[in-house]
Amino acid sequence: MSVSTDSDTRHAAIAMTRREWLRLVGAGAAAAAVPGALRAQAGPRRGGVLRVSASANPSSLDPATGGSGLDHSFLWPIYDTLVEWDYETLQPIPGMAQWRYPDPKTLVLAIRPGIVFHDGTACDAEAVKFNLDRGRGDQRSNIKADLSSIDSVAVTGPLEVTVKLKHPDSALPAILSDRAGMIASPTAIGGLGNEHDRKGVGAGPWKLVSWADNQGVSLVRHDKYWRDDRGFVDGIEIAIMPERATGLRSVIAGQNDLAYQLPPRLVPLIERSKDVELVTGPTLYCRQLYLNLSRGPLADVRVRQAMNFALDREAYVKVAQSGFGEPAYMNLPSSHWAYDPEVAKLYPHDPDKARALLAEAGFKNGLELTAGGYIDPDNVRRGEILMDQLGKVGIRLKFTNGTVPEISAQYFAQEKKFDTLLAAWTGRPDPAMSYGLMYGKDAYFNAGRVEVSAELTELLAKSRESEDLEVRKSVLSRVQRIVMEQALVLPIAFEAEMTAVTKRVAGYRSNLLGKPKYEFVSLSQ
Image (cartoon, rainbow, N blue to C red; front, side):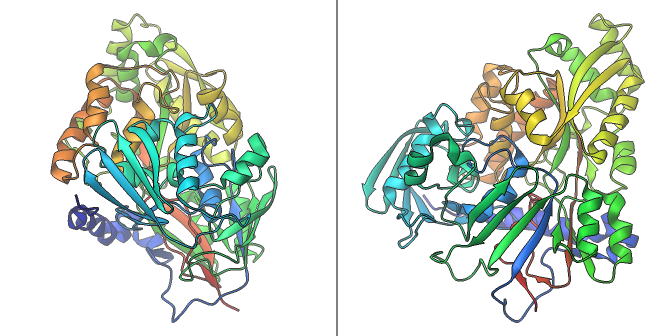
């Protein structure tokens, strides 16, 4: 079985999106926006320290134990992945390993020679097996659902690992381009134990120097990095600046070189700065209300459906996102190859229908739901918009705000404290990953650990059996319909990538996940 997929289909969809992008974001912003790669250059210059403003503290620097989708931009510099993805299509491509399927239930990984962890130990087949087994079985692992199709992992050569599958899984290469494929040093994990959360050791372009909570993360070049076509800067200094306007001002002032995931309201500041440019593009980054189906009124599908009918998504995009992005009627945007336009018609804005469903469910006089939210002003504003929209049909949201790691842990991992969580699904390279991680019975992001139906469980597995995109699209359409008919989530809007960079930055490239990677970045004098 070939490792390739029908990339032409995906590329055509993405290419269309990028051609339309400047029109979608508006003529005013287009003058300042640089879609895709930022400025071609003759050849990257080595050296210098990239200074980055990040809006949230990482939850962990161990890819297996973290719980925030915002961790990736801290993890990617430290850890290489077994499989990588194409920036424009998210199609899997070889990374630390090449792969093949001798048969539909066997995946063979051939690891590239000469890869060395930051602690000087070799990354070989034993190290890869250790990481895959740890991800599947460690009590603290949050990536068990990613690797649930694996039956066994065996070392079949010094640089070869053979993975036996419980059932065919065409999504596994894409899964190994995410957290599950980030390979950490077994020696470091054995020596540090849980402290590896704070002192992560990988084989990526940069190694960790220090992490000061809510202050910053410092990285330095890995001198024995196995590739010479990336990892150009000598170090990366990431400053934690929860207020995104402050982060942008630090770039405008020259204190930092890059600030990412900026709200559209800050675009005028970028336009007025002669030394800063905006990199923007479409993403899978979906702002949504997670729903804990095991709690109170949310156990009733009619309440969840009422919330979806109450939401005015188009108004939200105009007010909260200044028109950047698109309304979200499911967990995939309209540009995605697996998008189903019929499912997108299920929930037009209909307050009267929402009130009727609430009355039918026994909440004629309305109801109150607790909600977790993040403390930065933009998230507080998003919460206010939702409180207003849902409040008009009698659904009162009572928010508790805190930092991203605190609130996310309280909702997903610890007390299961709130009925809902206003956050984002930051996207995954393969749609089967997203649906499995959010709606699988034992998935980390399914806070209530509720199995909606045996059919959904069966379809989630079936969506990963074939490499044929049309076959997969048909199955994923059924998955999407069940998810939205059962109203397992309240998708709100897809956000655009908004990254501000100084003109001394070259080689920065946007991607569909909307999370910055620095592997191709270089700095001018």
